[in-house]
Length: 300
Image (cartoon, rainbow, N blue to C red; front, side, top):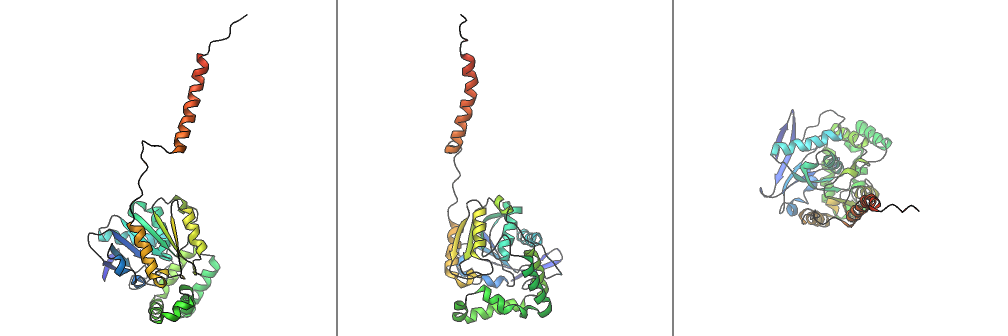
């Protein structure tokens, strides 16, 4: 682990994998920390130089008084890349991390290669539900939400068969600074990127969990439909699909990030649509000239 000083704030950052490999930056969900990705590191670090960090307000990173904005969270990620000397990286974020990824794709597309947006949304429900959660956190602390959150993050079947994993994730949630959690909730409450993401042009993979009540499959499908050329993969999991369906998640991500780049269409071979438009324009230009060449009728 390493502490990076960004301005007046400190961020907890971990870098793993070959130094000469492509960089993959990964961002945690609301209420977790960089260790939510532990099941990904052995497989992904064979292919990538992985940069993972505790988001603002989470884990061992700075948790200043909020509320925070999505722009602030996105600029944190860019500042960390700058501090590490990384000009361009792949991105992978889940839930809140997926929202940050959308902001980066819209506001700093030249810094991102391909992006994985997992179990996320372009709008995270109505303000009333978020405000109720804010009230509980402020009155009861993280303990007031923990069981409800675990039930949204994992299916009952997975909770029964993986108690040690559940205990680890529960502990991380309970240790999240309540002020930082509340400040990030405000950023998600106010988010609406449903129209903006239509302008994204990077290669994007959207992962959804078919049993996810936190960001239902429809939310991920809407993102994939809005972003031109986006891929969509559904896994048999709830919200933290990277943990509940780790093996399938890892394979899906590696296949997407290591696939050959899509070839650009050769300029000398226009598409059929372009060729048809060109032919129509050419014909339109030719008509006045043809009419001018016609001889006037003889007078009788």
